[in-house]
Amino acid sequence: MSAPVNGYVAPGWEAVKDAFQANLDSGADLGAGVSAFHRGECVVDLTGGWFDKDKTTEYTSDALQLVFSTTKGVTAIAIAMLVQRGLLDYGAPVSQYWPEFAQHGKQDATVAQLLSHQCGLFTVDGKISLQEALDWNTITSRLAATAPAWPIGTKHGYHALTYGWLAGELIRRVDGRGPGRFVAEEIAGPLGVEIFIGLPEQYEPRVSRLTNEPVDPNAPAVDPAIAKMIADMMGPDSPGGRALSLNGAFGEITSTEGVFNTRAVHAAEIPAANGISNARSLATMYAATLWPVNGVQLMNDSIRECVSTTVTPVGEADTCLIMPTTFGMGFMTHGQFSPYAGNGSYGHPGAGGSVAFAQESRQMSFAYVMNQMAANLAADMRAQRLMDAAAKCADDAH
Image 1 (spheres, rainbow, N blue to C red):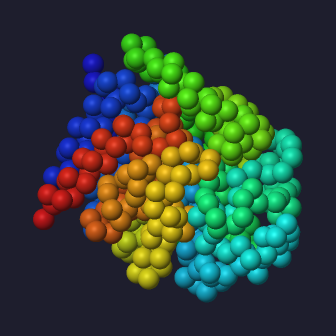
Image 2: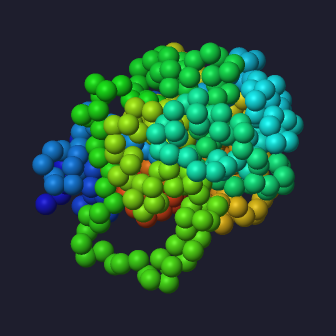
């Protein structure tokens, strides 16, 4: 029996629905949402499958979903808006806005280097508890007092959690509002969408819990050799492991799912990893970086060109993720790790499968969210099938 799917698909975009239904019916997805905009208009807005792993409740447009690092794109858009308003400059030193950041030789680190993961601050010096990490003033003070892990600008490494607090403190310093409030008042509110960094308690019942239990019990097990390689690369003492767990504060990487299902984590502001939203809202936001949506355009042409340009060296291995990654001003740009719909795409994927991005050449934005986590940080095959279908539909549109 086919999984339930509801929503809207414009004529000519049926291939996205077919791919979405196939993901659900194959057992690759439990509950999910997908949305796409083309030339400023919504052409796909679908939800389907199940809200819970016991399949007692359908996954509908009312569902909200934690999207891990897809949150980084939301924060990057907030920063871009402040640059556009003249409150921040990508080329200026971070310490110009945040004087305490200058500790341990970081005084010349630029906003651009910070946003492109080149500052060597992928975790904090020393031990930190989860409670301390969830306290804004504590975590930002600890990061300001942390010595860079490499000479700033000489390499890059994924700041899996710390990116959000670093960028978020810049927002707070120049605007006066924290990142959660800025996103609520300057992005979500004007666009009429639901994007939360720090979830108000009344929305908690609408959040679909993440699961990393296989939906399909017949799915092939991970090759033991590959599992060992991942464990070696992402072990608790590796740069990747320390970045993803904040020196263990968020638990073992394999069990992070449990931490990110808690009310305490949902309520905190973790602008790199705890955004809660849905596909329609994220696709709307990215569409508004290209076109006016509901009378709101978040970026002008020059800012968009700047933020979507890759600034990390071509082919440079990511110190934390081992393989090459590509970053612009807070966005992951098109590359091997983040293929999206091809050249010119800018956005961010999230652990377990979610992704949201825009591509100017196709005048398209896209978002996919899900509650069934795959064992990957990016390049999720469910998402890629949907992105490929959307790109072909955009190419065929007249």
